[in-house]
Length: 153
Ligand code: HEM
Image 1 (cartoon, rainbow, N blue to C red):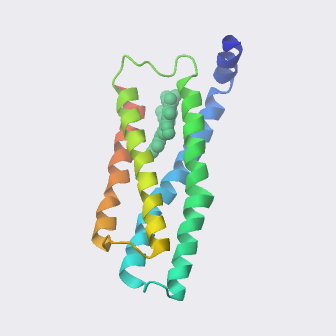
Image 2 (spheres, rainbow, N blue to C red):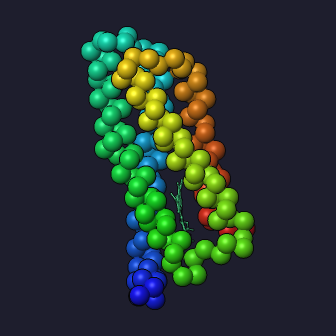
């Protein structure tokens, strides 16, 4: 049974990896853009206005329509790669570094989701500057992830 699954994963390795990268690109597009929307939302938009409603719609569609499915797909195809024979050697540092950075990225995604709920409730307390600074978190994590998965130390 287990042999059948690993054979299947080995046969589909390059397809799984392509789908992983496609999902990653979609997830990252949203993860970089949503905090930018929050910056404009805080700095330019009056709570309760029509523009507020438009921003909330854009934020909901980005998170629910793109980022959530893309994150799930990234995890599914990424874990399929982990279980593909010969892909990950846990005696190296890179899989651990990547795993830590990916958990950080997943935390950041959920942090953005919580902030979106505050915008809906009209209780956001964070400044545009905070959202600008938080935008650097996924940038740093992305650099760490790409270097670890490609250099494979
Ligand atoms: C969510 C959990 C994730 C898991 C479990 C995971 C796991 C993996 C594994 C095992 C590989 C295969 C490495 C190989 O075949 O050489 C891989 C490839 C890759 N991953 Fe992920 N990954 C995840 C998320 C991410 C994220 C968030 C990014 C980017 C921000 C990313 C970027 C890449 C890239 C670019 C490759 C292709 C590397 C290459 O072919 O040399 N992954 N991933």
